[in-house]
Image (cartoon, rainbow, N blue to C red; front, side):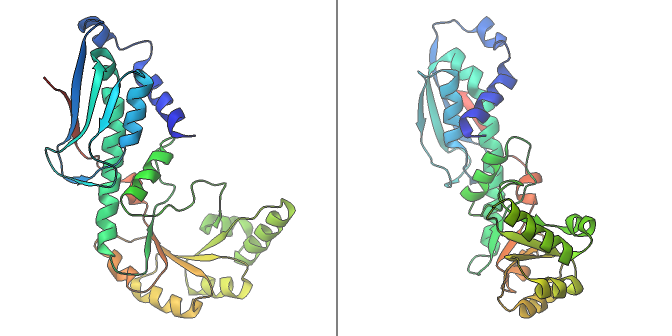
Length: 278
């Protein structure tokens, strides 16, 4: 899935066999101009995606991006101007806004959390807790807000979580089976292992063969202790029960990464609007 294909799907969903309201009310030869502007403060994301929406509806529409992705915006800021057939502008309006509002909401929240751990070693990661089919734009928005992308899907990294461990019959069996699978299938994928307690951590260190250890639902004090035990042998990631209020406490332990699912699955879209400009 790429941006072009995603936009095509979104427009098919919205337009169906035609924007009958615009076709019924607006003369076919009418042309106009509309301005997209911010109704909330935040971090802007999705400008190029919105441009793709307008261009797919009507390749002759002129799109002028006034403020680029990653910029801080304030109420009343004009972020984009579109000019062309009035029917085309109206047909593209909602889909373009949906992308920009959702992506800007993600970028804004991500940036807020990134600021909470500013100056520390830890990097903020997203997760796979995304809206189906929209993962590419939601992960783009995380990067726009200053965060980092974890694996994109199930195909680009091995991530042995608690259910995998339990179904496999334990950590040692899960790791050994993974190593055998990668050899047999000639695949070169990083391996991350989730541990739930210090007993599992000890077993993971004994078995080895992995690249990163995810410490799930460890308190900051427990995390600090675990990092001393790991002693830099593997990359480390903290996850579970971490809020915007507590994330700096976790980051101050020196953990390499903190993953936060809420970056993409508990987001309120940023309010923007598109209005005819006369």
